[in-house]
Amino acid sequence: MTTASHPPASQSATQARSETRSEAPPSPSPVLETRNLTKAFGGLVAVDDVSFSLQAGELLALIGPNGAGKSTCFNMLMGQLAPTRGAVWLKGENITGMNPRKVWRKGVGRTFQITATYASMTVGENVQMALMSHHHRILSIRPRAHRLYRDEALALLEMVGMADQAERHCAVLAYGDLKRLELAIALAHDPAVLLMDEPTAGMAPRERIRLMQLTAEIVENRGVSVLFTEHDMDVVFAHSHRIMVLNRGQLIAEGNAEAIRNDPRVQEVYLGGGTVFAQEDAADA
Ligand code: ADP
Ligand code: MG
Image (tube, rainbow, N blue to C red):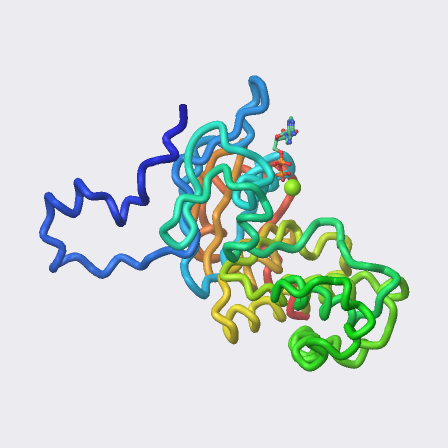
């Protein structure tokens, strides 16, 4: 029914048997990998035969016009949607079709397009709750929760620049602060991979840059691998190690900022959509 059972190419038994590998460069082992990932909604192929890998410590951007299939792709990676065809591998394990909770437990964290926090709790308590959940502590000990994992929560808040707001209630936070809190909550689960679908949606340009700078630092300091989608090309070009371009469900280009900027097919897609790449320096102003 699916091709989900064949392993990543780097582990292909037939290849390994038929070649002498000593001359080949060591193949990096990806943290996350998709093989021929496909999702059809009726006659519409939203994601079409997409194969890519995310390396350890990599900040990888997935861009493309509205409706290109980015969110559908993310939903398959996190177990929200079952692929029509193809497979998802996490650290060498086939996780295709696993439910979201299981995928999350295996180390695929995520932030949401809609921010999900407990409005009635403080910033610090929200992170503590996430840490308790991560350590399988039950929530019935809530009266003692103000001490449990307090230091760890503060350390995570420090990392996202929110330590000074630990006592504030989430209901009163500015949107950009909520997004940074959400990042701290995702990190509380110590993910190997963090999926961020439009993390900066609704943020002012300066805040967007700040959130992605923060994400880049976290990638650097914690070795977490991040796959993110983002509309703002300045943010993408400034903050990703590598960029993949999706158009009508298909990957049409992949490379560093320079390569993507100069790719004729990418220019066609974006110029057609009214986006111009030439202003990459504007974000630094
Ligand atoms: P993007 O995130 O790149 O904007 P999406 O993955 O949300 O794109 O959507 C890709 C295409 O799939 C769009 O044409 C969208 O209308 C369609 N689509 C997404 N989810 C569904 C669904 N649950 N049922 C039917 N069509 C869908
Ligand atoms: Mg989307």
